[in-house]
Image 1: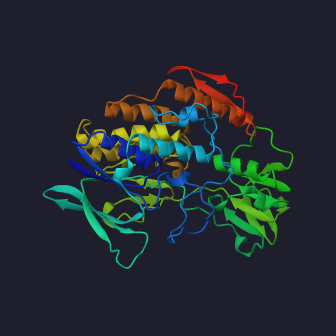
Image 2: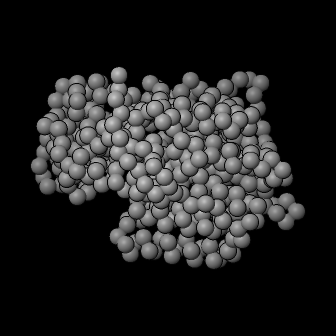
Image 3: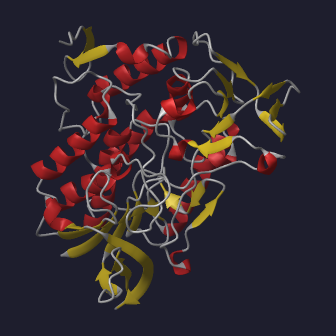
Length: 429
């Protein structure tokens, strides 16, 4: 039997625990979760700095957040959301869904809550790589000491939406207004009557700009992408990226400027693997993590894996594919290439992305690449692929968002079969 440590009890960690626990004769899963509940980033909190244990707040949820994907494609492949919910659900509904998932597969018994992993280190024993996992209670009681257990494999599921990335902008330090990152944004009402710049036009940047525009006097969304084609609220406009900050003015790359009361950075997050010992040989270079075969398995230590590293994806279905890929590797059902062959595959994937125009920092961005990627890892693992309808509906919603960004979440859908869906009307009483 293989003992497997899972770091994190968010969606990815729960998925890993679910499939490992299906094979109790092969695996013994232990999930380490630093909070007192499951859900990861979907656990909303009013706190924006530290939690009750003095640890940095993990969640980036804001009070009015609704998913930007319909629940029909967000769900794990064989575990649908409540059919009575609207398609674009609130963060509370996603948390309830994950709690239901945990209960349905009786996963709580495998979770060590309020437990923080301090160090993960590979150790060779009898010619085989094992893993020393050191952990401690977050309660920091005097009787608590660091403990260590040995595992045959480690699956990292700690998410990547908790360590804010803020760009270095000239003059920002002297700006007298309010400066926050989307990680600490909670209520649009806090900015009532303010003139704001939102930097970043990814999914969260657009959603937060639209949310805060309901209360702010004016919102300028600043970004480097092609101009948004969708109509925007009257008190919103888009401009180029920020060049510098001078006093209470934000200067953009075209040298236009705006007097503003605040800046909201929607500029993404950094990965945090501070618990991995240097001997793990995991490198993070401006958003690129190496050496990960298929964005999952460490090429030198294949018993160390990462779930959910990829971005711009349909997350829960991909987590499912990735977890099954890991399990197939651990059981030997899938014969892995040699370390050198995996390294070649990693570099080929990276170079192909660069040729296609992706920046180095987008080494794990998927977007339209996700569907072939999902099929590839499922085929390698010998498991069922994601139903075609998930891509069909995902792509349709993505297309509508480009021209109807303010209202696309009002739509509702129903999956007809594995290939088709229909748009439906939901009457709210």
